[in-house]
Image 1 (cartoon, rainbow, N blue to C red):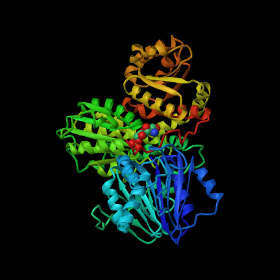
Image 2 (image 1 turned 180 degrees about the horizontal axis):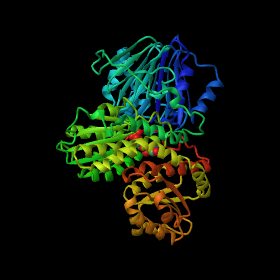
Image 3 (image 1 turned 180 degrees about the vertical axis):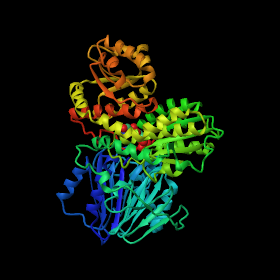
Image 4 (image 1 turned 90 degrees about the horizontal axis):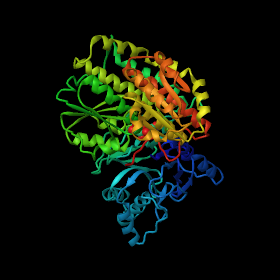
Length: 612
Ligand code: M6R
């Protein structure tokens, strides 16, 4: 959450900062701001509540901020309401120092109190301002900026990625990170810091990932990275494969729609390199032939949609591997006494690879002796780097806050992993294995077929967009699918929605079903389709309007009970959720469109959740 960009170079900083912030806005969009050091050493700051457009207009209406070194920020508010004063950058009392920050300073109240006693005057309600005022306090004491930075790092507790400007050193910016992402980019016109690689793609694809507790000093020609002890570090440079067009809308009205439509290609990219000579191959696991040796249970740990992928994985992996598999919310995991140790394999699922709760679960698992394998989209992200093994989804950048192609690629990758492990453990018959491999080859085409029905999803959404409450019901992996469909709908359309295991509804919630209530019924999971039919009849007989999702084979049986039916191709039961989710994504998308919602940037949300 929150986006950070910084530039030190040979050209004006403000256009570069604004362009970077535009690409980072999906990380937070409550307010935005920039600070630029003029060559003669004066910090100029502009920050505004609202979207980046407000900042752009404000900058256009005033004398230009000139300078070739600067920092920018787009905010998702934690401490202090979104307003002009609480927007970043925050400036020290003397105006000499400016800071942008992503994360939370947990002990900020205690530090603020002690600074207040020393006469420091605070302007904002944020935890971030504490950093810059404390930095000024130490800087005044020691007259050494780097010493002051280290003093601050020794004092603050919490998670942070920061960019710091000081008017005494107008040619440089300082970057610091702990438990929040930050990377350095090396460009032709200068060097960059950014919380996310998408902010840099227009300028460079050569980056260095900062690790926890590292400090970087960045100028137009030089980048120095130091460890916590102040020693210089030699750090590897990485080449990013994504190109700038992958992070642009390309003619679509929204990133979400673009990313939905990209799913055939994204899923193909996930699957294809892992199929060879009729086998599923994970080169990433080649050195770990004994991954499952001594493993008696698996935890699938994730947040939000990635957790819903874990729910699907629970059903699939338990059946395939014959050991207990639990899907866990990462935010609960470390507080719930999981049975970790060498006999537990922990699989962390995360698009961004930066979700703080998932990261904390990973660390807890490692600390307690479990192996961690992660399924991640963003290369070089923290979760990817700290895992024992990482499987990349290769879905390309996902910009819309509501995940779509990351979800489908995570699902298919997790299912492939389950089948691959089952094959190794000799727990899957050759016939079934070959059938799955065959269907994996053509899965992207099947997704393409589901995407052809846009008109039907549009028409159905136009009919139901005014409902203010929607239930999703399903059984087994369809229940997990319903969870995802429901989340998609509520996060972008703001319609209240709940997802229920279909058999559970009659234990209380069915009392909410009345004439006209909209129920989305998932009847995709073949072994339980008939039981789902009965559940549909139950809600129908209480007056519910039912939109059903089912396979071609069951079109008549289910369609006859529904007001509308979305039909998807039939594939192996295990792979069915990869197709089943697509109509749910589009239904949610078109409902939100009809309601005039800000689809790519829903209220109160941010793409990557790096606070607890
Ligand atoms: O980056 P991650 O996959 O770790 O993110 C996890 C969730 O925050 C994410 O899936 C969230 O639920 C999506 N906005 C849902 O569309």
